[in-house]
Image (spheres, rainbow, N blue to C red):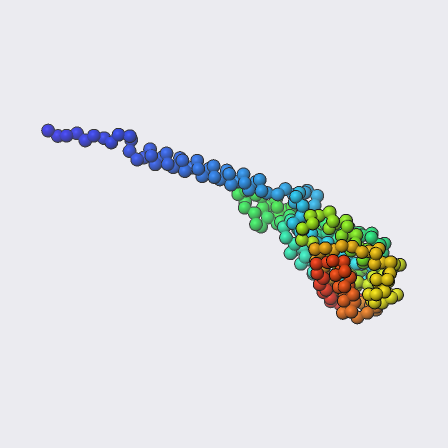
Length: 271
């Protein structure tokens, strides 16, 4: 007599594998959803006007451009090259604000102000739109900056050159409105020849004692605490002193006004 084989009950391993696969799909789907939700919640929105994060810029660079006197073509080219490097090197979310110095003490001309929104090159196309980001970067940052660069021209012969007042105004109107612990940089493109009714280096030379006994010391005193300063020095043929001694004067002025540090870069060309 032959024996009949009993079929294994439960339908075999196939249903078990199906359940396991379904469970894995559910787990992966939940994980992916949680990941994308986390990414979306940590993505900082941008101000549509300035392209800065709505939480504030990650760094701030203020540029004081002195066009109160003539500048040679060579110096202008050097200046444009350095400004171009500044725009390219500003981190995503970093702010650049550029102001022109006028002959009126404390009165500045806004020339450019925007944050670098990022060009989309580091975005994940699965959760972001790199093409839209690139367009926003071009329209709101790169093109306006290029237009500003084209408009930098030869300065005129102004009656005053109130550099100290310009620095004070930038500190009060820009740096003081930002987070105290933010990285702040001040760039001054100028021949650094202070000339106002309160104090003039044309009249008294670069004697620091003469400055300290002038009305300018209290009038233009300002706190540059935690601000790193870079001077793009425009060399003049008829400067009141040699460039080294002149820079030493300003280095002391920045130290006395509590700047974090001060660096001087002499631009090419003689004006």
